Image 1: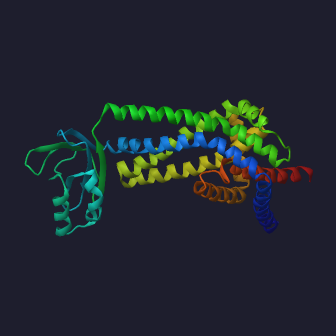
Image 2: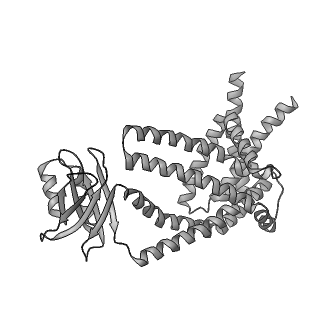
Image 3: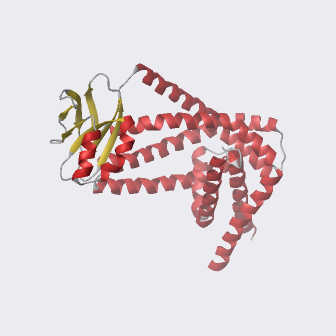
Length: 350
C-alpha cells in the first residue's frame, strides 16, 4: 500500500509537469503577453528593493556601530571592527575598501601594517558602549565612533554615508515606488491565477476576462500578499538580526527557529492563490488552512512542486520574467493543484 502511494505521488509530480509543458507550449503567446504586462510593476518592485534593502541593512548594523561625529569633507566611509587578540576600529574610504578586503582576514603583522597604511585612521577598541575618537593621518580628530557590542573573533563592516536631504528624498521616493509596484503586482496575482486556472481547465477566455478577474480578486489577493509579506519580512529580519547583530549561541538557536518558521509559512503560502480562486466564497483564513492541509497531506508532492517552481523562477530571472514568468508559474501551480484535487475526488468516489 505504501509503495503504491509513493508510485502514485511520483506519477502525479511528473504528470503535472508534463501537462504544464504541453499547456505552456499551446498558450505561449498568452503567457508571454501576460508576463509583459506584469513586467512594469515587477521591475519597479525589484528596483525599489534593490535601493531599500541596503538602507535597511545599514539601519540594523547601526544598532551595534554608530558614527556620532565625522569631520567635514568625508561623506562615505567603511567603518571596520576587527576583534581578536587586539580589538581595533579602522576607517577606510569606500573607494579604497575593496582593495584591502583580503587583508581583513590576515592576522599577521604584514596584514595589519597594510590595513594601517590604507586606512584614514584607526584606534584600539577599549570599552564597548563608549565613544572612541579616531585620529586622521594628520593627527587631528577624524571621527567619533561608538561600538555597543561585537562578538569575539569577528569582522564587522558598517558602510556609512553622511545623512543628506537628498538621500532622505531618495528613500521616500523608493518607498512610494515600492508601495505602488507592490499594490499593482500583488493585487493582480489573484486575477492572474484565475485566468491561468481557466486555461488549465480548458476554458479559453479573452484578455477582457483577465481584467475582470483582477478587479474581482484584487483586494483578497492584496490582503493575502500583505499578510505574507509582513510575516516573511519579519522572520527574515529576525534571522539577520539574531545572526549578525546579537551573534551569540542563543541567538543562533533563535535564528534557526525562525528559519523553520519561514519554511512553515512558505508551505502555507504555496497553494493559497490557486485555492483562493476555487474557494472564492470562503474566508482568507479558511483558504490558508486549506493550503496548509494540502501541503502537508501531500508533502512529497508539494516539495517536488516547490523545487520545480524554484527552478522555473531561476530560469525566469535569466529571461527577465518573460518565459515562463509569473503566468507560467501560476499555470504550473494550477496544473499541480488539479492533479491533487483529482486524488481527493477519486478517494470520495471510492
